[in-house]
Length: 259
Ligand code: PGA
Image (cartoon, rainbow, N blue to C red; front, side, top):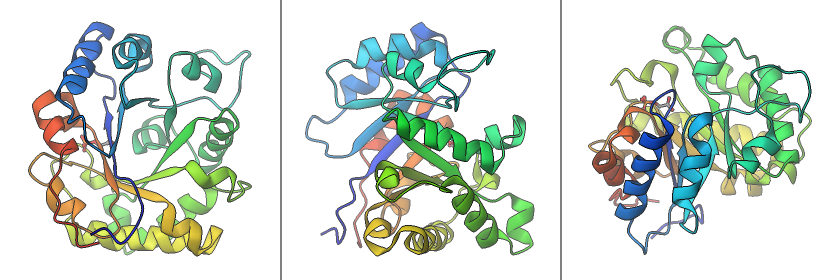
């Protein structure tokens, strides 16, 4: 029996893959393969140009639609950016914010992440906030410091009430796309630390309720042991979410809950 009331969430991050048609086909396969009695939340995050097509396929289903990023301004001269109301218009209820690829490749700082969090919350979009340390940071014992800094920065100026719906994804950068998953113990340790930080920022009630997903080489064959950890509330899945059969297995994980 679960000792907490956190609804598991499994999210697929499709990154810069697939045409609109291919994404819609994969979304249709996910919809068709979903156990109708499943109580988890399922989230798909296609690339911007596929949002409308995927939304059309998901209409009336229990699968939520997410963007992979969102701008912090509502409109104006921001060439290449997509605003909260625009992703909403495309059917999104969620937005991934601060993914390590945005931080590393597009040089997003904690300040930018914070602005995006605020803009999403204001538009009633649920942020899926990504945090995580690099291999170098882990090896030099800086993991906790990095997580603390990223969390403090991301939530700066956001009230507990505003932060209520936020979902956090702990994604160690060294585990993303590398096939090197964190061990269930490593992930659990980091999740406990993240939860403690959230208690420091917003108090115990918030910390007990906030969902913390794990991301980084989550696969059909490692999801069960990850989900058996007491503080892992779901997964943010990249590569494995591009294959319908594998991702459906991830979604229908069979954790023997020790929670
Ligand atoms: P991966 O990606 O599952 O391919 O490691 C996870 C992510 O980047 O969200």
